[in-house]
Length: 184
Image 1: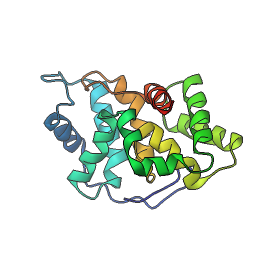
Image 2: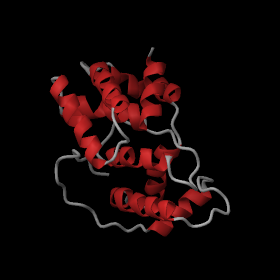
Image 3: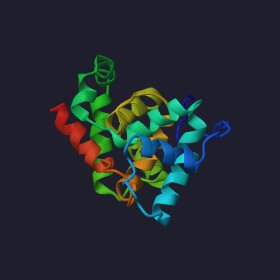
Image 4: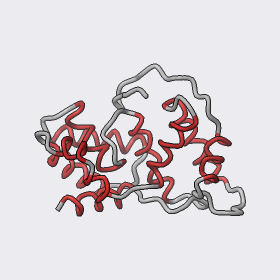
């Protein structure tokens, strides 16, 4: 997987996955409502998931792992991982999470444009960038501190939570609230 900053253009990999691939994985994992009638919102979400996540997955297993991050989130479990303590122990990590929470909670749903605004807002308020900024942000919203592929997951959360036919998804607001509560 390659890491990118959401505002930095990168050379995209060829997407070898289709909407049907995403739908098949969701069906296998029980994340599509059984016998759901096709609807435009669901078709659009599946297509968007394929286009955002597909280029970041080298194989079907990796695509499934990225989709897991959308449908499975447990802040308490995330905080039990020692590697995540290292991220949270870095200078300013909790400041980034506090600013993230304020930005996510005071604004509309997170899409690509909103995510850029959130990142820019946090950058204005904390003296951190790169790993010091993005690792705590990704950890709080996705449960992983890695690269830019996790930013694509963040972009799918709010729309997944409101798409009929998908299993319940914790949106960005719910995740940041759960994460902050678990930090206490």
